[in-house]
Image: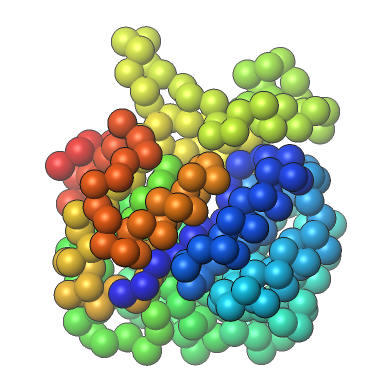
Length: 282
């Protein structure tokens, strides 16, 4: 099993993003995802900027995948999707079925991202027939479910989001803007003020969710490091780290070297993996 670095989920300024991917280029991580997956109104980097970063990472010896939006709402976003798919150099991670349809029409291979609801082998085999090379398991599924897939010896790679804040939902409404009394059309890209999203708590002050623009994440960090031996036995090909700081690069590098004691977050969860409540720590 190998390790990958997922796309940045947050709205960072351009110098911070460039510094992050320069650190990734200098690391031993073999597979890097990059691109805007949450909201097209985040215009700190354009497609050309991401393409230049992808080329820099490739020149550093990395396999690079360009990730796409999980919620496509406008014609301009479809135009951007076509540019991503037709980049001519890099594999694309499709995060909604519209992107899958476009990739299939263009007869281009793709990775199926975690925001697509793939819940059975029949659907996965159909996607593979359309060009899917790798499947990232939806975060709410369990190791028991995964074992029913791997025992069939599928003809595509399997990737599991093993460490990071879980992407739970996407909405046409921007909750970060609403929190500040702004509407989505005039949001002032307020999500850029929250480098790891905006923590939401219950009335009892229990961490509950993390608001990241139109995306809702888990408040706790998914931590499946102890499950790495089991994943290897199941035949998982890639263990994904979803980054939330530049330190995530060194953290992933350490995981690759067998280090399991390093910790980035105090509040962790692993419930979904055990078919339990997602926010629980089993």
